[in-house]
Image (spheres, one colour):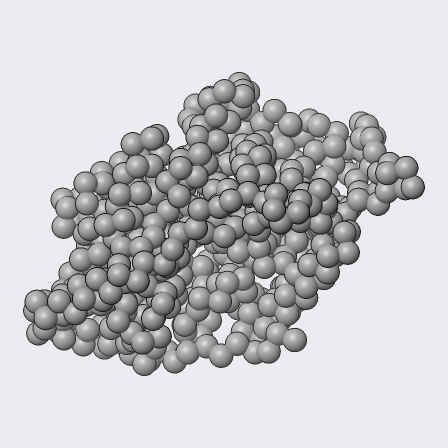
Length: 546
């Protein structure tokens, strides 16, 4: 799996191993290593289902329930995405994870000049409720949970999801939607932001508050350490930054007068499974404990119900571990990523498909990733016992070391003034970008081994032929034509009234969700709704990174 730094002698014997987080691995671990680490079963592990939940949130683990398999999917038109959704569900997937194209992520309609060449390219193009009606047609939204991989305009897409569910006869009380909705990680790790960070945090607070009151099965935010890790953070930083981002959102909602136990149980996480397998497993185990401790010690959470302390979420992806070179190697990588997720106690898992290093997955590659997860679950023994690595001298020792590193990184953010300030100033972005640069230089030097990239490299003639997903210009043109037709046919007065109400709500500082639902029902477009936010909030100009 990688990635660790191995120092070898002249006979290629490994003499030193150092993980990205800074953990130095000994050749042998014994009981005294646990003693030196201060390991205590009750404090550090306890039984599965018991605080601090290091061994998992369910007493019987996978014996009592399989993990949810939620492959990332969605591309091109809503019709194409609906077809892919149905293919995955028919083959055993029990949740959706929807990709949006770049214009949708940036709050642009498909006919916006800035969207040219990007409509439907890397995800589903969504302009209005009409697109959701097509994409979710014949999907049992009361049984299939849906992740919406969207951030800057997550409030709009959550409102649209409610509107389409109700149109198809599903009450907002029974639908399970999980928008990613993590704008701080977006600024740190991806770049698809629109509004200033404080405004983005306010919108996230609106979705959380609204979900508590109106959508009891929705998970209104999924804190996404995944992209922070992809952008250069170490595994320890990934967890530390994710928890500190979550704390920022917690404090936004607490200021509104809500009790922590009434909303924090709705938080979920999206954590990366790329990296050295043992470091990744230690990261997952430490994350569960650190999140529970953070909630108890900082906020006094868990007084009413211990379940609000659960570290719930998706362990998935592994995108930065995939290579364009020798792409079939990615099938093997994906299997080990899935194994690491299972051994780390994932509740939901998604694997990148082997061809995602260079294209949108084909139906065959997407199905192969799903089958990989199913094989891991059904054939190799992952349901035999709960947390099979518990008690390992090695795993428990490095889990303790991982906790200490996470604590150190969290303390650094606290000392800086909190995650919102650190992001507004560009502090975290600079740190992560520098680390990614240094890692890339190390990869080029051979400090880190990547099979097929800097070791066991093949001649170009020996490279595997790959099937590319060509950009569908005709499909984009049809999408734009459909949008123009929608504008002609919809009730213009109803649209104008709904947008005016949204504008007034934003300017008064009210919760935008009820007004957004009305806008969606009137077939206002994503660009029209996002444009109102932009008029009021302005746009974020990131400080220089270097």
